[in-house]
Every structure is written in C-alpha cells, then in structure tokens.
Length: 406
Image (cartoon, rainbow, N blue to C red; front, side, top):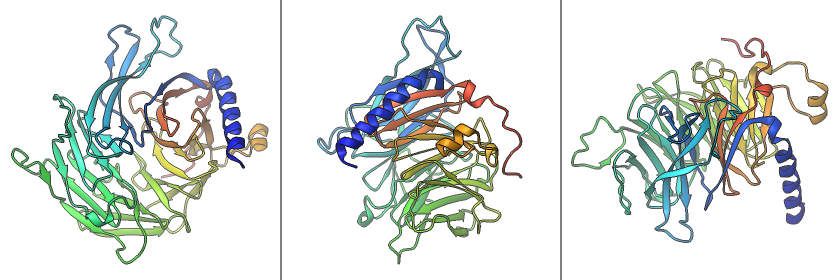
C-alpha cells in the first residue's frame, strides 16, 4: 500500500471512529502535544477537586516532551492535571475539561520511560537514552537545569541505547526500582542508602543475561503479588522469572516463537498469571505453575503489540496497544463464549471487548487510571494524548465465571 493510500485509509477509519465515539465513550478528552511522548503514566494519588468545577476531579499524568533530536537541551519530564467527571454526562459541568501542564523537569537526553512511585506519587523515576535512571521529587521547586535528586547507576556504556527501556517501581516494597539495558537487569533500593551527601546509588543486585547471544532485554517488571519475583522478556521471545532472595532463575520459557516480546504484565491478584505483548501481533497469557504451554492467545491486533497491562479494578480485564494505532480492551471471562453474528462477520474473538481507534499513528504508551474504573490515558506518535472512559453500555454485560480458574 502506498503512503497516500495508507493515509487515506487512516483518515477514513478515524472519521468513522469520530462519528461513533458518542456511543462508545462516557467521555473523551484529546490533548495535542508539541512532540511525541514515548511514555505515559497515571498517578495513584487521590484526586483533588477542581477549583472551579466541583463535579470534576483532578488526576495527575506523567509523560514526556522530547525535542532532543533537534535541541539536546530541550527534553522534559512533564506532569499535568486532567479533570475527570465524577459523574458521567453531568449536565451541570460549566467548563470544558482539558489537560493542564503543572510542572516540567529538565532531562539530560530523550525520555524513554517514566513512572510515579506506587507508595508516594510525589516521587518519579525516569529512564532516558543515557545509561542511568533518575529520581525526582515533585513536591519541591525545580530549576531550569538538569538536577535529579538521585542518579541510579550500573549499566555499561557500550550497550547504550540497545534493547528496551524497562522500568518499574516495586508495587509493595517502597523504594525498590528495577530497570534493564541490553543484557543487563539492575535493581536498587533507594531507601537503604544514606543520600544526604551522596546522590549516586549503585545497584543492590545486577543480573547479566545471555551475554553470549544477540538477544536483548525488552522489558522487566515486578510480580505484583509475590514481592520476591521479577520477570523479564527479550528480543528472541523468551520469558524469564528471577527470585531476588536467591538471585537465581526460577522459570524460563520460549513465550513467542521467533518474535520479540516487548512487554509483560503480572496480574494484580493472581501471582501465577501474567500477560505478554509481542511483535507477532498477539498477547499471550501464561501460568507460572505450568509455563510449558501458553494458556491462551489474544488475537485482534494487526501489527506489533508494544504494551499490555491488567486492569486493577476488573480482575478479568486487560488492555494492549501497538503499531496498528489501537488500544484494545480484553475480557478473559468471555473466552469461549458464543460468537455473535456481528463479531463473526468482523472476525472478532468474543474476548475482544473494545478497540479504541482514536489515534492516527502508533500508540507509544497507555495507562489505566486505577482510581477511576474503565478510564485509560493513551499517547501516540501523532502527537496526541487522549483520556477516555469506555461506555458503561459496552462493559456492563454479565460476564459469567472466570475463564481462567484458580
């Protein structure tokens, strides 16, 4: 397909999405960005009431503003407020909800990923195209210079820019951070060090992974229920689980044959259940108790899947995003359900609950809003940030029993 034909198709699909959006969402906010953001995260901090409109609650978003390719001194970590209606379709709202930037933090190079700390959302960590992880405190004034509160070291210069930019705070242990670069995984405990006079922290432990092979780590995450486990996925389709008590590999399996795995997400309540996002355009579901065989494959994307994340408010629901410009919401309770005539015609599996098609280019990141059920924020290479809530009419059907049992 030629570039002009592809552009025409994208615009046609976007127009169809826009026409149908009033029936698909309880609300949607679209915000233009000056540049593509590769990362997005919604804070778990309890929202503040809007000063002018009490029926709106202000939630915090974390994303990037990157001019680094044209101006190395202009890469920022951006914090913004987004007003979310407390009640859907509230006719008393007197202002138009929009995203408002409240703080920018100067970075040393292009921002790859940033996350709020789980236990203290005033603390954020950022991974840039350099080989360090930086920690910032958002509750104190920041200047016009690059001034991180902490610098986490441990990655070699000769693998700069290779592999993914995995980064995650521990969901249970405050101050634990894990990140990856090339063949290396490192984790730090920033609260175990006296940082009064020392602002650089070396890793608590480093794992060197397949140094003899041309395989690179794409993502790394903590298990959200078992605080001693962390997982990683790589460019050759492998899934590996470590136990930080012994620093030994507990599990290793080929998750996706001959395709890189770009992201993994542990279930928030079932420590044995996880999902993987792969360049083979699928999402894989795995059980740590029997890893030799994949539980199920979620098929609905048409191109590389870059991220997958479980919904903390709905145990059977997860979302994924990719290069096909879509964020897809899945409900694994619907696996095996009878396919309706419309789904059969569209070749949609019953577990594909909804496809968000409001972006015109690759989706670079998305984040569930844990404090607002069914609310997702997403960013794409078309320089758009969107905050949206799936219509209750779509997700309120009786879903039956769990498709994946305990």
